[in-house]
Image 1: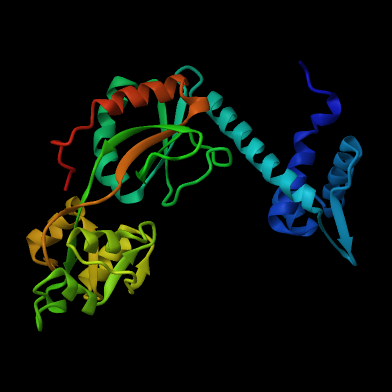
Image 2: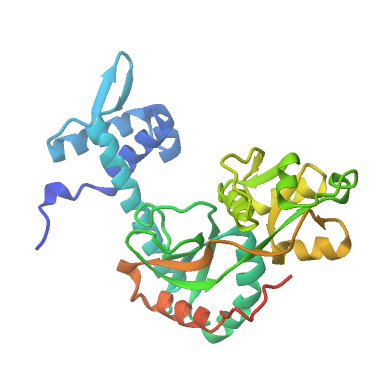
Length: 302
């Protein structure tokens, strides 16, 4: 059943609303849209008249959106993103389709990208667009068809495929433990520990695997494995790194095991996709292809 015309505003008025919400002023919205401030105001006014609701609240000379309009703008932003992505897919690859994939920076570069030439040979008709995302996100508000994610598979509204597990190892620069070599896992609590932002419980889980219970594990926090690796190399403390990521520096002697060896992580790497997009041809082709790339005996590239 077709929606009433009043509930299908123009793209121009919706863009004006989204820009006003995102940028916080009519002047900034006008600059972003290459319009005059009065043109933005007219678009918002036309939208109010069409919907029959007040969207703008004025305070002196400043204007802002009402609480209901702010929520409306969030949903409009997601819809505009979907329209833009659909338009790009049609324009860039009208026959084979495109797959917008969110990847973890390190795992994506080390595990996925070296394998992609094979996917390109098998499916030259599919355009694969990659973007890095560190934290989980909402597929309803981000323009992705799938994501490679570390952790568990309990992402709401999605289906998943487990790609592989991971082992981590506690490592540091040689000088960090040159004066006093740790004799047990608990000794690491006396050293500066480096934490990765996306895995806040990693050290606690590692210590528990060594039969050390720690309710609080202090240390400094880093946002990505690239930065925490550099911190470890420069002697800032002990880092828990995926074994595949640490191997090169361990073999070169730039890093040494602080204590112990590889320990399985509690999480795994998953391919995650929204259930609503499960039958899209480009996603189906990628999912079938990546299923042939996984196996516990398949060591990660180093």
